[in-house]
Image 1 (tube, rainbow, N blue to C red):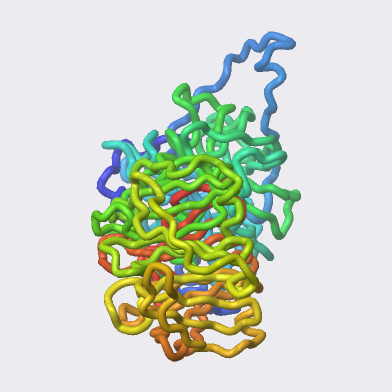
Image 2 (cartoon, rainbow, N blue to C red; image 1 turned 30 degrees about the vertical axis):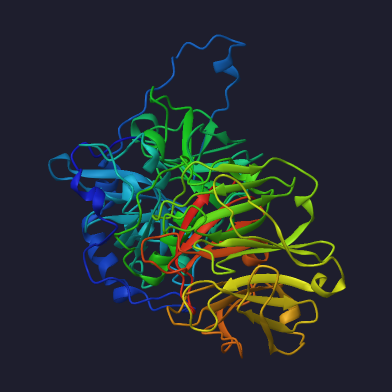
Length: 603
């Protein structure tokens, strides 16, 4: 499970490596891509990987320490769960390769992931970084059987994908640092020696799943322990609850029998023996390669899948190299403090430069009426928050808000629509407080219908000087020349309609980098649309960013601002129903930007 690579360090910066022959031509979206090489690569590999060579292979993972043979009856050790050796399952296998002077090696555990590419294997990053051109993956491996007698054949590794921010310690393949959270990898394989793709051969695949938290009631972990503790070369399985590895975005389980070789093992929430499906929420790896400092066989860790692993899988399916210029990974030293349990209560958000340092900041109104300001650092992160208001009953009545440069101020103010229809402007909001309040509209039915507000640049001036409002009947207005006490000139740009009544959230930003800003709308069905270059006289053409989907139905609050270094208000912040909060940096009118987690789910 642990470091097999005190021989390799330069590979740490590699995010994808083509192995052996040309990478498969399959791309995301294809229903049944043609297997690379028609199985020739696997047939060539089978000439070398005889039954004897596989049987003689030695584990490349460092062997974990076994517990004492003398276990006192009734002791904690005697009550500890113990893994069961069995004949394996079709969706889990092991890898074989060579390691120079060490000869052939039995190398980590992998599992089949259900994707449109039909050729993706999940494992640990510290395993994948050591794979070379002669590596093979063998599902449900049978020791003593030749490649043609393996239940599903053998599959040649074509290309591996790891997050470039996964940084092993010097001279090692593993780490105890925050980047151990990124110890996940995917590999693309060619067809087996019979010309059959991986998923077609095994008849299914595991579904990549982001868990709702670290504490899982029942998770089954299947892997291949080293021969030194498993002479028959069988798989091990154990079903236990999990907890969080404190300080890391990782799960922890207690179960004996997980010796070297099990790195990369899938953590499955609905496992069935030899099942063709299941949901996988992590892979054995992470801190110290997946175990504690004592290297015992009964403590194992796994990175809990999140946005990072999901993005990496997307690159593997598309057969594209992940970008090498991602911001440094900070782990649970989160960019917004408080954890998901707190951020589930973030009711409303707005972005503007309230500190006057030319970097936008994030203002949050909480469900208890508290108001906080999170100064942006211009790099997609935030400095220590400032509490502008403690919990109170007044601000629990805030229904919509937006930050904009209204009334010609040197820095933006905050416009708030209350539950009784009153509208207030705070033109001098800053770190010292909200400042004086200006009443923009009296309580009453008129502004009660303004369901969503978004400040923006809609008539070619500099900055978010205008106000877009979506009304309950679906009509949309834009107001320009706003000043304290007056909404200036208002004009309807969209007539009442059924489409805009389905706008669950909206915000505005310079996503297209044009003189007029764009409006981004999250629909009630989870779809995401943009309206590029919206002006004071008409909405831009409706542009589909995402079709209807279940994930975006969980977006509960949304705002956009200039939170990174490019100088455009095109960085989208989304707070999800589970409290996870995400930054999509450099979002465009047709595509979401690079995803960065500001608050991790389950924390």
